Every structure is written in C-alpha cells, then in structure tokens.
Length: 348
Image (cartoon, rainbow, N blue to C red; front, top):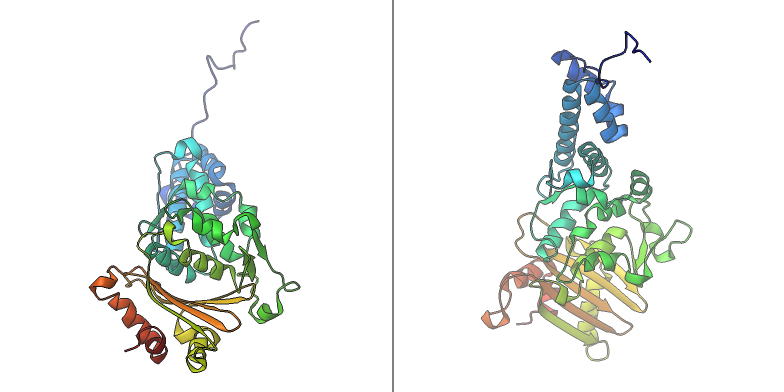
C-alpha cells in the first residue's frame, strides 16, 4: 500500500513544547494551575512539563517553596527538615508524588506546638539520633494514602508520618507501646468515653486506651510511651531518686506524696501525663527535655494504689551516683516541686 503523502516518514515525533513567557509562568502556576499541581501530583507536574518546560520547572519549584513555607510557619524548622532529591527516590516514587504527598502531610499534621515537644523529648531519651529529623520518600511511604491520613485524628497523623523514626535498641518500641502491642489502640467517642474523661474529650486528640492503660489523649499516650520504654531499650536513662510509702507507715508524709498526683494538671506548671491502669493511677511530670535549650530529659513518675504511693525520678543527665549524684536533675526537681521534692526525694 502506498504511503499517504501527508504521513510522516519514520516514527511519530512528540509535539514541541510551548514557549511560555517568563512573566506569565509564575502567574499560571500560582493561579489557575495550582489545583492541577496539588491534586494531580506527579501526573499533573509531568503533564505541565510536557506542555511547557518552563511551567513544569516553575511548578516543581513552587511546591518546594510551599513545603519550606509550611515548615517555617508552623515553627518546625528546628526539628524537621526534608530531603529534596533522595538518592533512591526514582526506584520508589516519582519526585512530584513525593513532594505533593509530603506537602499534604505537613499541612495537616495537627497541633504544631506539640510536635517539637515530642521530637525533642524522643531525642533526649535516645529514640532519635539527631535533630532535625530529615524526612524523605520512605517516611511518606509509611502513610498509606491521603484518605487514610485525613480520616485519622490530627494527633495520630503525626505518628503515621514520624512514629517509625522513634527507635530503641531493639526496634520501634515506642510505636509498639502507643499502638498497644497485640491489643491495639481503642479511641473513645463522645458516647463511649469514660465518665472521668468526659470533660477532656477532644476529637482531634481523643481519649484512648493502649496497652491496657487509659490516657486522656493520644498525645499523652505517645509521650508516655517515649518516656516509659523498657530501660533496656534506651540509651543512658537512669533512676536518680526513689521514694516508696504506705499510708499506715507515715500518714502525714503519705499525704505529701499524694499531692504529686492529686494536684490538678499541669502539676507544678509542667507538662503532665495522667493515666489509669486498673487499680493504679499513674502520673508523669516532665521536668526537663521539652525546651530547645535542655541538654537532658528528666521526669517524675508517680504511681498510686489504694494506700501505697511510689515516686521515681528518671533522667538522662550524664553522671553517676558515686560522683555526687545527678545534681542538675536534683536542682530541677527542687526548683519545680519545692518542699515536696525535698521532703520525699532529697531530705537533708
């Protein structure tokens, strides 16, 4: 059959891309084309690149700028960074998909002020080797889909993206604790929340039950898990002071100890985690480790049964009891708790 005169000789060639004026590119990307970029991900950016190289490059650059802007505006710059071009990215995920999904996660993480607190504490406890955490496509892959991410309470989204980074010596024990191990995590609704927590219910950070312990929020469950990992899992976490008392042995001193757990949260102005495990009421009072300038973490663990109270101070401060104890931890406890600390933990 003779060739048609209008048929091209050889393979079909790709149409030439448009040349778009530079002053128009930015307006298009930040205006009518923005939804195409954000909702179509790599496909949208690739399609725009096929139409115009300039628009494709501008679209990619605009998404990068949006990621940097979100990190800065949410005050996450000291604890979160991101890798623009991971070495193994091409084998796992298209660059456009990675950036769009990362942007969506960062925009919808939830309560920004609690994120640096969680990450700094995890670093002080030895669950994170360094800060900031540099996110990459492997972190994004931990999030199953946009719908799965959006359907979760805001506090849970943080752990969906970052939880696998919290690792002790034998793996992500912190995450397993928060997830309740084999028992899973139960989130309460306004209809099912225990009466004691009814006034604390927050749909964005719900009351939950994990590892047979009831917490006033999922964030509290996360912080509790970070602090209370099995000591064998953590690096350099030590018991700095201990106190144990029965009511019948010293009723007056028992009442002093009871103030540690009966004082309304936040106890002594510190971040306070309250939990209930069967007949035991538990409270953690975080003394150090949440602020950027803290070089160690320390917390008071209070456990109360019917007529028995146990108080323990745990710290990552460098030092040894033989060298005079953990002086900075002692000073922090006395500064925060005053006479209560001196009577119970550091008597003259």
